[in-house]
Image (cartoon, rainbow, N blue to C red; front, side, top):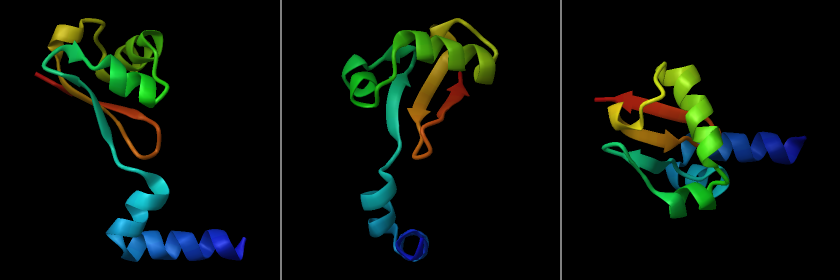
Length: 81
């Protein structure tokens, strides 16, 4: 438990350590085109992307998405065109 607290403290005050421990956001869609290699690296299937797009962006049309990112938390965020 103390190690977790220490890592959380260091990640809060050190951006570099935060990236090392938590990672960084990855872009999986840009201008309606998906990046399969990045999706595979983040273990995101097309079904996962479609589901999150319907739930978060309220659309099922990938061409309406400008950018989608897998955030450090594992959630997928969407910015519409």
